[in-house]
Image 1 (cartoon, rainbow, N blue to C red):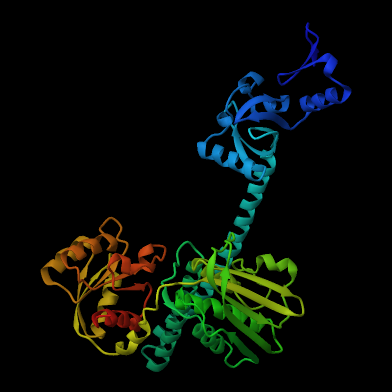
Image 2 (cartoon, rainbow, N blue to C red; image 1 turned 45 degrees about the vertical axis):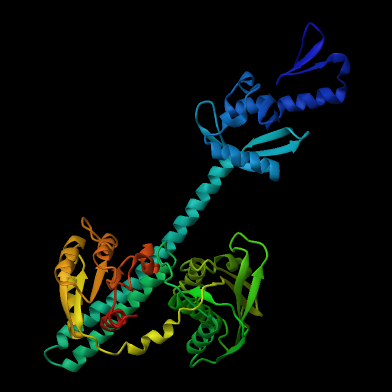
Amino acid sequence: MSVSDDGKYNVPGQIEFPRQQMGESERSLHAILSASPIGICRVRSSVFEWVNDAMCRMTGYRMEDFQGKNNRFLFEKEEEHTRTAEALTSRGWVETTFRKKDGTIIDVLAQAASIDEKSQIVTVTDITHRARAEREQAKIGKLESLGVLAGGIAHDFNNILTMILGNISLGKMYMNTDAQRAKEKLELAEQSITRAKDLTQQLLTFSRGGAPITKVSSIADHLKETAQFTLTGTGVTCRFDIADDLFPVAIDEGQINQAIGHIVINAHQAMPEGGTILIAAQNAVLENATPNLTAGRHIHICITDNGIGIPEEHLDRVFDPYFTTKQKGSGLGLAICYSVIKNHQGHITVESTLGVGSTFHIYLPVCDVPSSGEKGDKQDMTRVIGGNVLVMDDEEAILEIVGDILAYHGFTVDFARDGEEALCLYQEKGYDAVILDLTVPGGMGGREAMKELLRIDPMVRAIVSSGYSNDPIMSDYRQYGFKNVIAKPYDLEELGEVLRSVMGGN
């Protein structure tokens, strides 16, 4: 602070006050502004009127760089400038980023207090070290979770592979001496492969894939049937309190049944001495949206047990993959539940008291589209329908297997290795049904081939198939002109059932 020839105090930050008007408190205030380690500035209509020394040190700009300038120059992107201005006006604070004079980016906390309709005092705190530490900690947490997940997957798959290889080896050994025993070993290997398929589907459920293939139905039957089936042979009973007028929901029945089953299993394991599980469901209307749910009509499901409860320190981790406190169990169950409900645009939470029990709350959005009534479609599934089928896949081994399966079901089969070959064959012969693989490396895949097939024959009966479930076609296949969908891997009965449904005109 210095004194000019006209008797005024010059304070860093372009503030001048007549000496005779400045009292002790005013001098103290301006000394604080100058010495403060926090950036302080006065802004009028987004234009800097003055700043203190700390603001200059923080950003690398001089005071004259600020004077009369719009604060937009501190932001790397226009949208971040807009977001920051709106947040300061609405709630008075925001965490954002500034671009320093040398081009480096810093994280800052900005807080504002209004002077009048156009002017504000804004304080700016450099939180770069804290923000980076938080991001680093989050990264470490993700890596730890990934490590637990990878270890769990490796453990489960190694056990499954051991059973597959062991039983196949034994089957080969018994093949020439004991055909019945060889058959038994191959059946055990087949069961193990089914377990591997189930594990893959569970993992896909909480990956970016695993999109639900939905249809509109009531949740009531699924709650009752899944719970009763899961508890068969246990010492646990189940009571239901389900409203008669439940709104319909659009669900992937397999995924929802899986989620409900895992929660019921968890409740059963929490009651080793037996007990009662209460499953309640009712309509609910959310007036306001939350971070996890949209406003509007929902189904609210509560699954309550009177078991041992969950320790408070574990409540935040119960939905983490492979987190478990049980001697037996993969720790995937509740993680799958969370992902299934999330993929249905719903939300799941848990509350628990040690020694009293736990309650899982599930919210699912209501669907206003009427049920398609597909339950009756299965009545013709056992009827053999002859016909010619075109199968397009780039894997020779898959073509051979699918050909044998379809021949067993009474179909004649032609093969194509990519979309171009499939189109040529279809134009030449025409087919009662077509099975298209979505992904053909280096060639035309199922999506492009289907577009061309629809031009050739708008009534083409096509089935989409893939080992990937993160493609939207798999969950919304009808929008792309397909009549049905089958995910790899599939077995003899599953492929025959899907093909019959298409050949039967459904």
